[in-house]
Amino acid sequence: MQIHSAIADLRAALKKRDRIVFVPTMGNLHAGHISLMEQARAHGDTVVASIFVNRLQFGPNEDFDKYPRTFQADCDKLAAAGVDVLFAPTEADLYPEPQEYVVEPPAIQNILDGEFRPGHFRGVATVVLKLFNIVQPNAALFGKKDYQQLMVIRNMTRQLALPINIIGGETVRAADGLALSSRNGYLSEAERTEAPRLYRLLNEIRIAIRSGETDTVKLEKSAVATLDSAGWKTDYVAVRQQSDLAMPKGANTPLVVLAASRLGSTRLIDNIEV
Ligand code: PAF
Image (cartoon, rainbow, N blue to C red; front, side):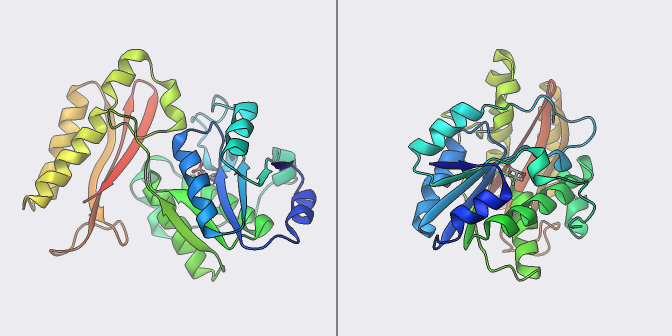
């Protein structure tokens, strides 16, 4: 696996490569990321991954400084997964001057996670567009665990007419249902035991809707109450339309249940399509 940190070196390395498939990450790779790398191979000839902890998408009181950085272990995993090229820029490589030109996503950036993480999706969209411009992939893969992120990136790619096929990868879960996430490593042993409750509740909401329950607000409130009485601090549990993450309008609209809640100081997000 080739590793490049400078934009010019990466561009030179990719110049003669065909059908590039790109998987951007912030590192601390787990089986969810590796599953995206493995799926990538089916969509092109050259698999490019990136590792960059993007300061722009972290709020001032968030975990940018403590975000786990495990570069050597990540490289070993990527090489074993058959990744051809790794782009691992430093902040000086990617942001040699203050990033004043940014991508400002529309109203979707202010709902759900965006309400609780102001500026987060601006930071994500900006770095992803910049990475797309550098790597110039034909296709790119993102995990469905970050459902709203995937939608922001899909919409940006479509509206800006980027010639990139955006592919969503299914969430990979531990045996007890907890969605794999780099932030799971922050959980204490007791919190890790408690954490699968989030997915169990999402699943219960899904089952209730499939069984004919239409009062989605009642389902949301009940899940928040259950979480909070078990010691969580919940930002939201929300039943939304898959197409635009708006409140459900009318029957037979495909739905998704999304949640974000804190266990101790760790904020977990998850979702399930109904
Ligand atoms: O999902 C992530 O790891 C990040 O948000 C991404 C897409 C790599 C942008 O920094």
